[in-house]
Length: 494
Image 1 (cartoon, rainbow, N blue to C red):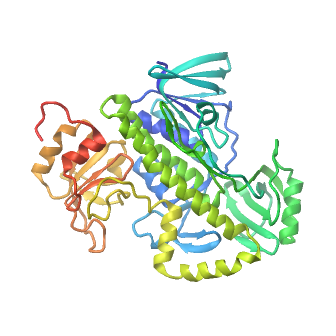
Image 2 (image 1 turned 90 degrees about the vertical axis):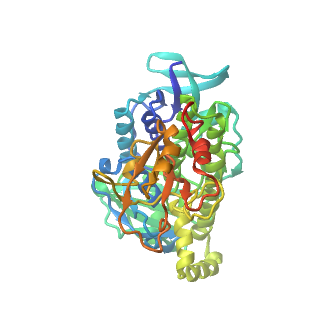
Image 3 (image 1 turned 30 degrees about the horizontal axis):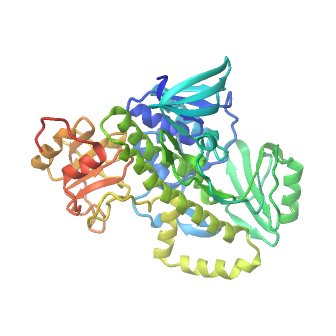
């Protein structure tokens, strides 16, 4: 084998997955068609859940000072994300190019083998492996791995070569995106509806302004090259009456509202993550964030199977958990597209929804949907409110130092948090200590309205989701540990 896992694509999904696998000690090769980064940044910023995910791995300091905001929107209707108690605020202006650079630094620091200028041409499953034909700087070569993961974008070669179905709807419109220097425009982060269409303005670092513009009734075009700046400026003029021809374009692109999702995220030894698995209108900046979260869900599971302590059923749970997330993503972005990009016939619905958002419960529901905070996995029955949900940040005081539930996840291992100094609990979990960190700690004051109030112990998966909690889980602790962390070592008492 050349590596345990080959990843096609060095975008956010591929780089995050490479880092996750290396945390678990898995050999990984990342193949990237481009010889160097373009600097282009389709994605912009992090949702609240992605901020938590990056914090769980200790990655946020790599990004320096991040501007955050509790303001967001659903289809152009303002939302207050501050109602999501205990969650990070969203990062608004981190370009995708910066995200990729920081994730690549992290992955290579951990020992990932990232090969630029290497294009995957074809693949085949052979016995207990996957072989890929690759065109690289030195010519053609064949690489072999136990698993292949396609993180190579919406036009994924891996998805096509492996025969994944990719059903959905074609684009019905065209939008323009331009990063431009030399413009002095009033920021409009959630977009402005105008008689002829919609525009959006976002300030970026380095004196760059991002503009997005779309006219009602425009048909999508299949472009072999990016649009000319003159075309973008003409659309801007028609929509706003403003002249931006004096600006200096840095990057231009166009996109549509096609919505497609792979029917399955795994076929044998080939898996899909990120845009390879789902494409949609980039409403609310959810695409890159969902892609990163795909990889965090998959990484530890794939590593566990490769290490031999988990069966294939654990990797199968990647599809069963993340496919519904992708389906919901397509649903909410299509709904936002109707609100943002339809004409005046949609105005009564906008007004009704804006009225409903005035109720905190509705605001919180929509904010949880687009931020990823609402995501819940099936980890078994029970009454504890955190079962299957993400573990909120919890300050801890141990025997020798202070810590937090977030810091305990930096290593990418499972965590059993004993909050009641329960020796019997620790004894029962001991057979899994090679895979799960067993930590006894006390908490600072937990308010009565917190989901953690009265909790004596919690089992946290490496992706930060709660797999078991006491009191409140129907399954006992060894059953939960076996489900997520395999059969315990022989000879250890339960």
